[in-house]
Length: 163
Image 1 (cartoon, rainbow, N blue to C red):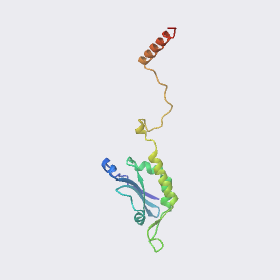
Image 2: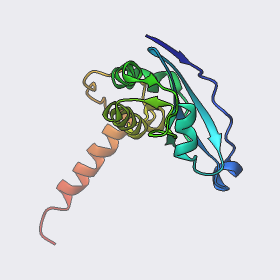
Image 3: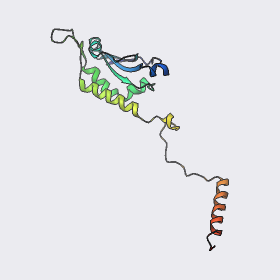
């Protein structure tokens, strides 16, 4: 199986994102166990029939989409199934629009994996390291806070008597 990944992401400015431009994750099914994966920018929704004539499947991705290689790793199993199922064919009277026949369920699993990958919590946004962390160490109280806590407890003890 030969899957070529074109990891160059088209630049998407904030102005473009606000004016309707977006990115799409694309899989071009070449047949014979070959495919090309890439992203592209589009201003309007792609036409499915026109794309199927070229053997391109596409799925919209968010403006924050930055890492095609990691995304492909997450969807590797469904992508392999999709590429293995793809068969190029000559358009005929019965099938004028699809140049490729493929397993629709495999493509649905790819789209599900893409959606889940995009919804994952981003470590950088949470301000933590991306590597898994062990249990948190117990917090050590700063001396200034310990003094302040002692003063508060002393003040409470002094005011607990009758007035």
